[in-house]
Length: 307
Image 1 (cartoon, rainbow, N blue to C red):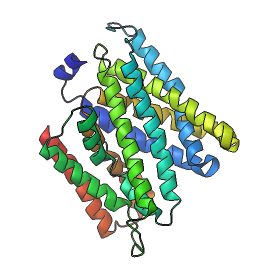
Image 2: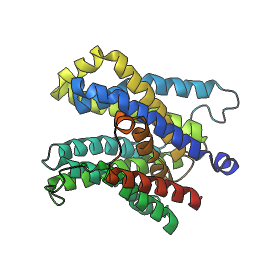
Image 3: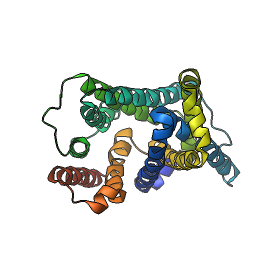
Image 4: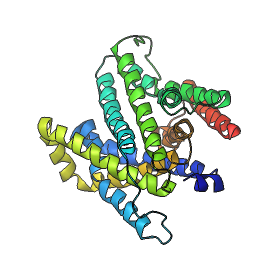
């Protein structure tokens, strides 16, 4: 893994940008499922229907000539990191749903976008990957821009910034941050595997765990959500395919560079989402939105300047 990273030190950049693009497409497909299956049902669709694509990627890598190790040597440490990532990602989704049920739900959504900052903190604590000051500045700029974009254009005077929504939002951001650290830790626990192989097995196993956990929960509490994603199998398949492609990119990037680098550059997804949205095409951006996008772009450019 270190050999590939040393030979191609910039490889993670196009991989992250690809993952952000694929995630933008996944979000568009997943959004249409929410009305039918609910947020948790749509989330399960991306895991469940993404499994065949993740498995196909693993099989393809093993079929390619020159594979260094047919199957990586999995350890309990690897399993622990992977479980941390998978479970934290599910918990983050649940916390975000709790935030959105609050009266000032927009605050919760905004605070959930602090995951890049929290990644820097948790990666320092658990992985001893301390970002430099320039990287922290890039993270701060991009995060400020995303938070601005998450706020309502009008009618924000009555927003409660200290209530339950804010706490749930911060918890959601922490969950997403811990998932990134967990996946990075899992990749580091497979030093003999190539980044491609470490990423492929990480996606397959993480999505299998998430499918079992979330699928079991919905089978117990909301079977109508399961029926909805089965009946809407075409959209579910599209969401699963794009979700798997995005996850393959994220996991591979985590095997190549720090979690803070991946999550910060991954905020390019916000820019992509605005570029392809109907709102961007049909309406003039509000001054706050323009400032938010400018801050995100400034953060991304600052990130490039640190490399």
